[in-house]
Structures are given as C-alpha cells and as structure tokens.
Length: 310
Image (cartoon, rainbow, N blue to C red; front, side, top):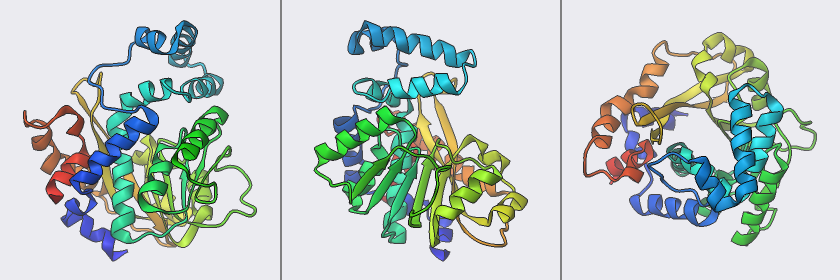
C-alpha cells in the first residue's frame, strides 16, 4: 500500500476536482435534501415542514435519547428520520461529516483504482453508497438494520434508474451470517456499527478481500492500539480527519478521526499516529476556514483538500 503513504506528504491527492465537489453537493441536495445549514434544526421547523405529529414524535424521541432511553429509542429515532423531508433536515446538521466522508472515499477509489465490490456498513438512507455507484460505476451494497432507511435508499436507487445488481440495499448488519457473502475490496463505516473493539474488527476483517481496505470513522478510534490490531489481524494504512463547520459547536468546527485499515498479521502502530492524522487540520485547514472569503458550505476539510488540488 505504498500509494497511501504518499497521502501524508501530498494531502491534495485526496481532494476531488472542484467541479466534482459541486456535483457532490448538488447530489446530496437533489436526492436527499441534505445541504449546508448555518443554524441548528429547531423542533418547530420539523413540525412546520413534516407535520405536527412528526414534530411531536421527533421532540419526544430527542428527549428520550438524551435521557438514556437505550437501543429502542435509537431505533425509533433512526426510523423516524429515514423519510423525506426529515431525512434531509436532520442529516444537514452533519453536512460537513457527510460531505467529507463521501468526498474522501471517492478520492480513495480514484487514487487507488479500486474496482469493487464496495460495502457500506450502516448506510442508513444510502447517500454514500448511491454516490459511489453513480459517480464511479462500481458495484455497491449498503447494509443497515433500519427497515425504513432501507426503503428510502431503495426509492432513491429506483429514481436513479440503477438495478439492484449495481446498487443493492439490505436490511442486515455486520453480525449477520456471512454465508454466501463475497469479500469486498472496500468497506466503509462512517459512524456506523463498526467500532474499534476486537469482535467488531474481527467481523470487519472477515468481510475484506485479501487486498481489501476498510475506511472507518468511529469515536472509538482513540482506543486503537497495536495489540488490538494484531489480535484482529488488521493494520493501519493511513489516518486522517474529516469534518468542518457545524451548527451548534462551541468553536463552530468539529472533526472526527478516519482510519484506513488493511489485512495484516503483524501491525505496527506509530506512537504519533493520532497527531499525524490531525496534522492537516492544523497545517492547512485552520487558516483556510478562518479566511473571510471562504463560503460557509466550503468550510470543510474536503473542500480544503480540493482547493489545494486546484
């Protein structure tokens, strides 16, 4: 994976051409109603645009989850926010993370000449999976345990005119039986069910082709260590950050760690891997984002990489 090592010295390689970034934003808005919003989504806006009953349910589930309502509250919440227009309103609050993850994976596919098949674990409404299928013409599967989200993803696929043989969405998760499941050249999990815990990583490895890669964004990335990787049979090929301008952040900005994994029997994790992952933020993004001329919707790491590329 020598190609991945060059990304540290030349981060612009992971930037999409500017016209492609604009197409990506247009795709998110047109197909899912996801767009940059400077202000937080208020419950009153949900009621106005989705109806009073959905508004009441949304408010109640938000409260239940804040009070530690458990998996059932989470399942009900993700089911509720699966249908338009609510799927767009809610996911617009994570616009920087969604845009960045899609742009990052898209750039990886192009730079590494990935040919598929591709799996997204925890695809929800399928925006990332759909983009990969449309933009790169690869065979893609999206898995999610939320039935209503899969229904939305299938509806978008049909609107795109793609057959299930090109873009398939299944109501399942990584714990399901792997009988009959082919290995994938690329697996993506962004805030999905894949975590940096041993069992989860072992399941991930069992889905990867011998030369496959996995892109994982998870809050548990900070728990990563060499012993864990060795037990899971994985190694870190690259680490980075995604994110940018988000509503209701104390500083106005937020980032998450992204890790690219491959199969390997003896992992070596650099002691400063996290600092290296965060380097682009401090060396390039801070100055770019704080420039008054930078539009709000472009204050993301993906847009910064694209500007460097241009």
